[in-house]
Amino acid sequence: MTVRGALMRVLLQEDVNFLLTNRLPRRFATNAVGWFSKIEQPLVAKASIRAWRIFSDLDLSDAAATRFRSMHDCFTRALKPGARPVDPRADVVASPCDAIVGANGTIASDEIHQIKGMPYSLAELLGDAADAKPFLGGTYVTLRLTAAMYHHFHAPDDLTVERVRYLSGDCWNVNPIALKRVERLFCRNERAVVSCRLREGGAPVLLVAVAAILVAGIRLTFLNTDRLLREGGDRTVPLAADMAKGEEMGWFEHGSTIVMFLPEGFALAEGVGEGRPIRQGEAIARRV
Image (cartoon, rainbow, N blue to C red; front, side, top):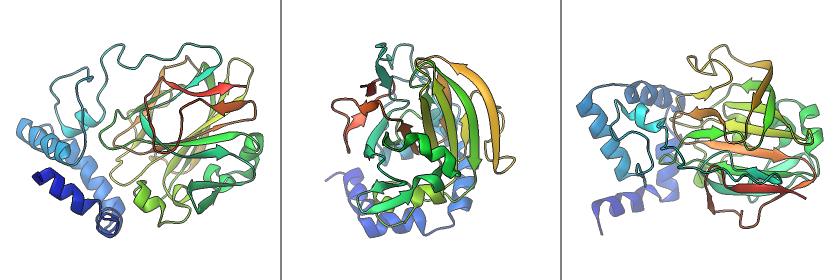
């Protein structure tokens, strides 16, 4: 067994992983990693990226750059043109990000699941019960961006961003081990509720970007990306930002999660299921 294999075998034990990634000062660790990752010193950058690769399946073959000023520069890397072709079909809603598909299904009531047996309230997640009503009977899908993945997220269709609600919170890990142990985890964590309306047909769509431990920030391109979204505290920002299908909407400064909500009239695309990988631009749902 390789050194990496031995380390991962230990770190993926549930009790050890939960202890190391949650039972420490989460916000302090997140701020510390955010600071450290931005150090633009060649030796520090190379060493930290090399260490990162030991603990993840980091693949930089589709990155636009071959050298990075810092670990943060690598976290937030752009891709080569054409690396993520977007499904052009008019009846297809594209995945907003690279991800592992998590819990998904029909929104039969206010209660949905972060993982089997661990429900949470849609109204609590969104911060307003009225915002949940248009999605009753619709579909949700959880998209987990791992640390090694491309961290940007994009418009799933031609749409208008109508509002962003920022809700401050904790920064629990969002991996399956934590989702099995921490009740209402997504409702506890820092998050941005991005309310959109599709240009074709006017259907509402929600993207809830959930921050996690070591995520030093959520940035939204249609707001001020020079400032972290958390600066300024809880707030609701009305908008009228038109975006084309596949256009960049923002990024995480580490891996995290997006929960996507669609109303009645949409269904998950064939092949989209729990535990399966998906890439930004691939079909995630279809109009029915």
